[in-house]
Structures are given as C-alpha cells and as structure tokens.
View (cartoon, rainbow, N blue to C red):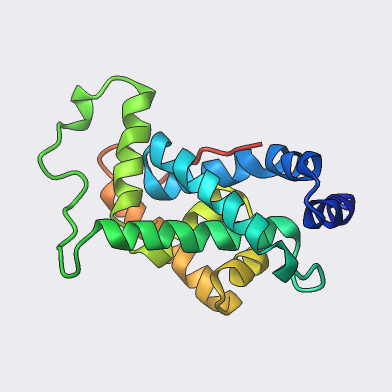
Length: 188
C-alpha cells in the first residue's frame, strides 16, 4: 500500500501507533499464512507475534525498492514457519500418509472434516511445495511475488505449486472423486 512507506518511516523512529497500524494491517495475512503452514491456531498466533517482533527489529533492513512490505513480511513468516516445522520433525522421520487409518469418505459428514483432511494432506507435502501452494492458492499471491518470498526462480514456484496440486488431488481423491479442483480457503 502506498502509505506503508510513511507508516514504516514512523515505525522506524519507534512510534508505537505506527507499529500498531502495521500489525493491524497485516496480522490477518500473516496469521492465515502461518496457520496454513503450522496447522494449529495457537502455533500460528505465536508465530505471528514472532514474525512481527522480528520485522520490527529488522525494519531498518526493509528495502521498498526490492519488494512490497507484505512480501518482505511474508518472507520472514515463511522462514520462521519453515524453521518451526523442521524443528518439530526429527531428521529422517518418515511422513505418514495423511489418509491412512482414517475413515472412509462416506463416514465423514461435515465440511469441517473436509478442511481437517485438507490440513492433514497439506502437512505431509514437502515444505517447499506446501509454502508455494499456501501462498498461491490460499493467500492468492502472484507467482512472481512467491518467487521473491521463496528466493527461487519463477519456474520453480510454478513447478512446486503444480506438484503440490497433483499430490493433493492424489491424496484427496476419495473426498473428491470427480476431476474437480482441490477446495481452497481464500482470505480477504
């Protein structure tokens, strides 16, 4: 947003109202992103706080000529969430199939269960595919912005999103037997 630069300049001077304005403007986007990567609301809340603390400590490093503030902030969020996910899972631990041991689709009755199943499926994607998918399909970010956030080439982003969609279709085929798109929660 255009007035981000003014608010950021004020926040760099320590103006608490400017910091609060940035948090209010971007906390929903950051929380949703963290929630979709970490799968637990409490973890997402903790991560969101850490992301903003990190951003305010490093605000002098933000370069508006390189990226929008939201892109810079989501880069911090991505790195923070990736670190948390990697710390949670011991090296070499195999990923379980998210639908193994579960009930048949006919036994599931509510939309909430469908979203829980999608969350489980997302949790078992490789981290690079998960972050790209969440940014593209849930956060509705353009692929070029995702490339900046992920620090990779545009083609890599497209490949990761495509592979994530293919894996999700495969894992969720019992839920959505018709060749329809994977459901996506969009945020405003």
